[in-house]
Length: 353
Image (cartoon, rainbow, N blue to C red; front, side, top):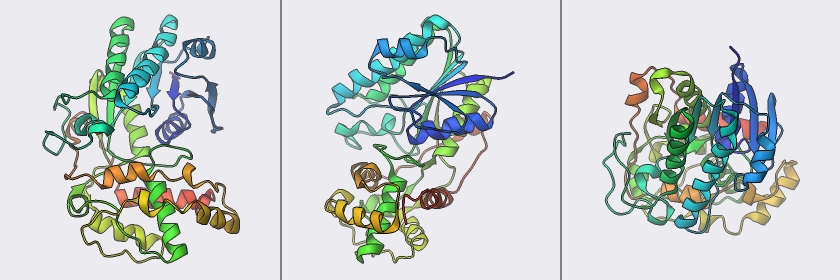
């Protein structure tokens, strides 16, 4: 039987990948965003999640079987993150409630569930790695918890099932996204090649030497659909990563090789991308003009602050996928392939030369 999906945040990395996977799987897909972008097979829904009246108007007559929430709004403090992002989920599910059609809601959060929010990121007493879903919430305010609570409240009221998905850093394509390591590293490598600057790892020795993992947007999209259509996954929280582990001391060379540059030696000191790229906006405009690129605004492609937060962690971070494997999710993608697929897509779309 044909299914109808509402994907919330289709202008972002996860939302666009999820919408594409749903279309490929034969779903009727509606994509909600404040400013929806055109996407094959996706019917755009323009609405502001912070405005209940906007949602009520935009969602009138829409009866989705499943809702995939893959968006958030960054605020100046964690208290504001909690107020705004918890409210956005509550507003959305409140607007959908009268139709009574929703059977499943999938919420995308992330490893800040275990590591803490930006204001307390990687500090204090943290759970042991690999992170496992049964590890409880940290004793600290976190907007992910507020989003979860809004889903749980609505599920109890309306009777739908839910799933929570906790990816590690996501590799995928989006323009204007607040957290985009893959595109940030592609832009940084391009700038290093252009200027002759060393392609220098910006993070900590713990990240350079320790094991880590990541999540491709396509893997996460498949995981979201699997949970929404697998009865055993109902009302469960899941980690979701590609399935491999690596060290940045190896991956950095793999990325450098793809761009035809040499990786710089790492001496253990942190030199952030925020610092390294702070004066690069003009250089990028010149590259974009010369190469005919589709985006000349560096700030819409690169998010150095977020890449710095991930690569600067003082601890090794790996994630357990055993729960999903036991329930039947078997997909796998090597993370270097995920990076290379993204880089090729960025080049094909004239976002990097």
